[in-house]
Image 1 (cartoon, helix red, strand yellow):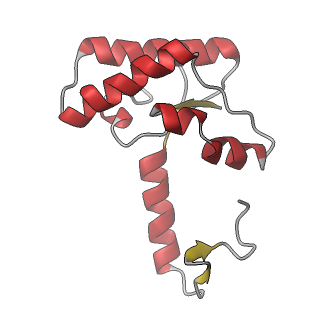
Image 2 (cartoon, rainbow, N blue to C red):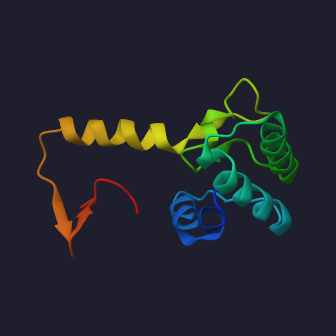
Length: 129
């Protein structure tokens, strides 16, 4: 799975561990591209600036992930779906914001008790970590 987001999202352990727990590999752009994407997120997208050049930068990164063997791309930052979607991406997209929101609603509507460990919500065997 390809992963786009801030440099911390792309290189941090969260997605790598979660994907590995399901025998999936995390693929990210090279360091130079990661830095360009990170700057575009903070300097443009977070500031409400959406340019064709930035959209093309993200599309180029997705093309690179496809060349690496990615079968889909996780949009791991809230702002990326504002410019990237299934229609303009070379790979199917997984919008982490919408997926997490749907999961949160499903959890909120479920009648099971919510357990916690050290102040954090615990899956208690319901989901893999």
